[in-house]
Amino acid sequence: GWFKDEKGNEYHCPLGKKLVNFADETHFSRIAMYLKGRAWLEEKTKVLDLAPGKMPDTYIIEDGQWRGAAPPSDDQVADLPWFVKEADRNWGTSIHVCAKPSACLSLVKPTGVYVVQPHIKDPLLHDGRKCHIKFYVLLVGFEDGVRWNLYTFKEGYLSISPNKWSPTDLSKDTQVTIIRTERIGTWKAWPDAYPKCKAVAVEVIERAVEQGKLEGRLGKTQFEIFSADFIVDNSGGVWLFEFNMSPVLKDPKDEPKVNDADMVRGALSIVAPWSGGSPGLWDFAGEFRGQPPPPKAPPAEKEKPVDSADSADVAASGSSQP
Image (cartoon, rainbow, N blue to C red):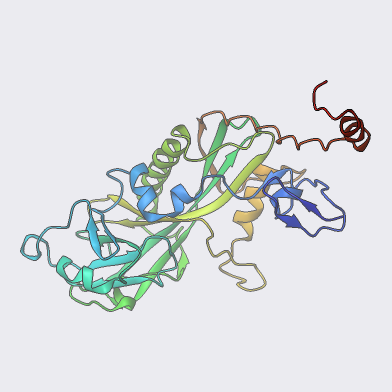
């Protein structure tokens, strides 16, 4: 009953390769729950190419040196914190905060890639505390490998710092907001911020699809729910910081008041509709067309072993000529 895929990975499944409508292992599912090419959204250095003008000024450190342009000198920058983040990690665990760009190189390991960003100017505060928007998107790629539909969730969360914000306070609690604090629907800035966040998500993801960074799967629907982190400034601008391709989602039994059951159920009713299902607060944001995926190469033919009777005839004749 075990089988191997085309890459030689062995799957321990007693039923062998049986397809069901939906399962969390792509090999057994008619619907894949991971997007092909998702690293282009998740990795902080890659998403920069897809979001020009939508993210704060960003600089890159690679193996202890600035890659490309270095940030301005200390006397040329505002009195705001700077953030140094490991390029391929999330959850805020790998963020350092410093006062000036000159301090950034001293915070990194000798090897690895880091992104460096200054704090946005004039952030919109929540009762004097820093906050960011946890914004959710659903992206569905269809079986033709070309069509994609994007949805954005009309609710979301605010992550709010426990401390009053000050540009000179370099503590992580004050400057790095991670934990989802409360639902966003009643926040007075949300009606203005939601369509702006939606527009940024549309622009970035449409570019990823059209450039072939996100790849279609021929013959298989694929989808993923993921989040985007935005900060709003006092001019009403929204700034994208990153996408999280595996966001924390809570069950009702764990979090009776603040959970994601409605979001997950609504997404599944879009991807695999059932009688009585409803998209809920998922808002259709756009349909995009990508590049057709190349057809799968046929498996390489194995060399046919020489038949023992043929080899005996060749040996008897003393010749390899026909």
